[in-house]
Image (cartoon, rainbow, N blue to C red; front, side, top):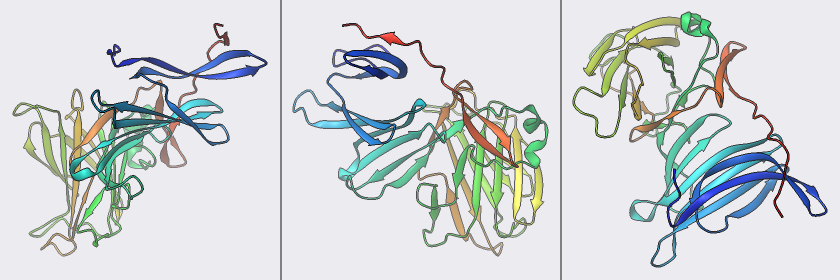
Length: 317
């Protein structure tokens, strides 16, 4: 994006050298940033933090800050957080972890208070193994790839809060399919209330019929609520673990996703609802030249692509 009158293009470089002869070794990030000098702090060996604060034009009071955590060996951007004021004096924190390729939005009543998850982000990742989509998804866990939801701090929301049941939901979005993995102490498929996953893929200002909303039942059935209903394949790995592949409802231009798993123990009432957040989360596309998922030891792992070293360039005097 182009700089505004109150911002400028900013590049962060890793430098090396001494005796006044510094050289640019690696470009760490390049972006539009607010005018002014950022604050830099050393976090530990080969780790630094850069804080940029945007200010209002009238009072000069900070209204938003962006925090970048860098690793220097090898050089890379590890984490980005944007903090801004929210309702009733709360702080809203939007974070993306480039190491794990996961992110979330949370709120906290004060800078030192714990952050309560509002929404998990949904990464769209490439699985660098054609065999996974062809069928090995049946025997390979989603592992590190995609969203992980169990209601613990930073991993979605469980309602009621005291009803943590041990249920775990994993989901991975790719351009070709959505993969879901559910771990539950018992799958209830008959009764007044049955175990099911509610899924929404949508965008801001979506017209009627453009959003995809459906229910995935743990016996493999799919019921469309709005838009296209995907085709589902299912495998029952064991009595407490099932995996699904859903095709035919592409992510395409959609911007937000939302998951909620309704868990029942008796087929009569809801025991708990496991959610990706209290609101829909942002869909975040991860370029394949940045990171991919690879099968390793029976589960998917996130593998960041190596950043080629930039030529060593002398700084202009």
